[in-house]
Length: 506
Image (cartoon, rainbow, N blue to C red):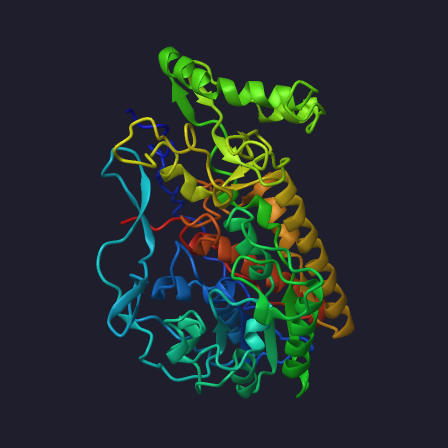
């Protein structure tokens, strides 16, 4: 069967234009007075950053040296150095591949690059075996205490860096290679550096796991015991509030100033906004065959929306029956079939009436679904096409109801962060508005180019569709600089995003 669809049209991904500079021989050389940068009321002499993958410099689905060097805290440290800032150390990976091993066995993949092997650009892991061994502790603590995968409460958890717990999923491999002891905490190690200034960006993973799993987790609102949470669950806002409060209190205990960022709208990331809901091409014969296969399902739905069923009473509304009706036609834009757990469960009456419907433009398909739609659930059965004859499971799609759940969590978390920023007199970075601006208008750079949130070509996000590119991190760094300058009367210059790549090319 022909390939179901092509996700990306990136043939013209790289456009390089050159222009000769006009040379005017008689122009005098203008000597500009050097700028005297000042820290204002802040003390940047010992800067510590705390957070998760966004702080560590994670991009293209991995942590690797070049990405770490382009982390926004490292950019901030370069600015702080202009106004009394000291050394800034990071737990650098062993190479630029990014893969992790534990006992010599791979436990995470390499960073993504674009492959043109198939004729159209496709993100694939870079070849080779990463040489970063988790059990080789690089010695901490470090100034950059960003731990990929960490949720807010993880930063306070003893043993989160115990290498003995990594294989069982009880500890974080990135923290294990830099924890000062098996029972250490990220916060404890960060505090031991004795920061005079700190940045904190945490909480996005407390909701991000839910959305990237297609809403397959649980909203734990009302449950204050994070030890019972699953990796894809949404944290209770009070758990997030208590964790961030404890972090700030600890970091400010010796008089340090700081800056905190709120949570970006995770529903707007490319990971959820790249794969269309209707990517299925069908010819007339196949569409007719599929409609015949779904005919009995559609007829049963109509019956259960009226009294023309064995129970003699309507069990679903006519609106729901129409919503669940599955229909295909010849063309390139047929919607995929999905499972929707929020539909009325009719399987107790008829096991064939599963909670399925076709996706709409309001649904968000996760980025990996592009490689799954159109594959066969059973290699021996050419009719078992995922997303067509076989509905996509919950983990492939974020439905409108699940989006509402995630949006409510982001609002609650950001209210917490805003209140704590005020209570502890911290500078506040509105990362939420920053991402909205990236997606709506983009950011115009000095050369006239525009950085947007478009996957693959926009320059703001890396190839994993979740984390910024180095250029995106530069824009974030400048937002931090702007908030710091406004709060502490410093005059840091920021960084030039053009000095950082929007996409790594091999």
